[in-house]
Length: 447
Image (cartoon, rainbow, N blue to C red; front, side, top):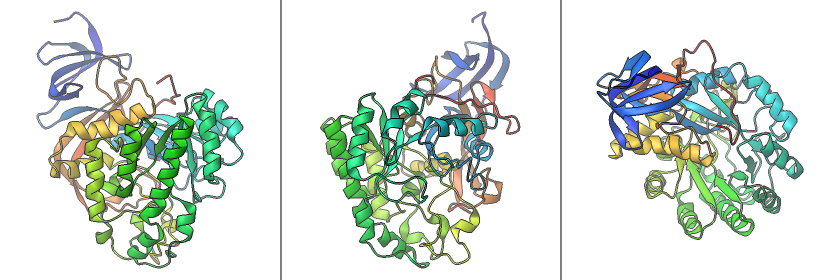
């Protein structure tokens, strides 16, 4: 028994720590976890929460791939709606992508505009990626010094004209620049020439769209990123991997000591090309959802450690941009909105495969935190921020898009039954109430 009184004590039979899921008492003061004791030690708190028998206390998830789109395209999404969705899904930290907002985050002035938009309306902690586009090599160091977590680039048209893509020689130049200050380049790796030679995606047949974004386009681009990272010594990260073909060369590169990491997304791990109805443009994303055999290999890549983490690539748009009326995959915006649903989507599939909750939280919490070099996020341990969620792993629910917090209520998961309900979420030891935004803006090196 200790005389210390904590701001908050949470105790229960199921607390997900670095030692696995164990009976523990968690003492929280000033927003940090300061004590982690065996259950029964009787930690005293001004507030005490007892977990229910069906509840597990988990570290808050870190989603390093979120398109908030504000300012400039706030009708697509915004900081208030996106961060509410994050909190409802047990995500306590997001890192916002540099594009789809206007201006894109390609210089310090644009970063300040975005921070001003986020500052007063975020329900979880928010950090920012910078952007690497033709001609802004000279802005990268200043953005890094201003606290972005790294730089995003595309190797083909990004979908928005104000964020042009890099040719591979420009990528190599920027990798050389960021290697000088140990920055990170995150890459949308599809090869523009391979896609130029692929069939046109017009019409409502999903298979036609799939052929328009072949695996080969990903494979070629990933090979280019690996070699440029090898030559420059820079850290590089492959975004939203969908082609399982690339796993072998990624594994080889990692063994060779190339500084390469890889993410994939819930939609690639759960949805199947064979099951997508014609005209169902809610499923359109780039790179695309592929076949069942591909999905199995992505799971194996995760289990083997070739794929490092799972993040949402939450890329919403207005419903009219999804072209639901015509269901034309050539016209519809490519992006899946899943920020609130990522944990139950992955947990439902993982448990079906006999994988424990600890692995899921590692892939969706600790590993994205490591990618962004977040020192105090993604792990439930003393010294870490008290970013936590109470998760009822066995409770099932049916997805209803109209009940989700993200701004435009469309999702490919509509009507699906999922396991796992986030009952309460805490950011820095304070419960998210969905009315008063208390999230903070975070910078590289200080979170």
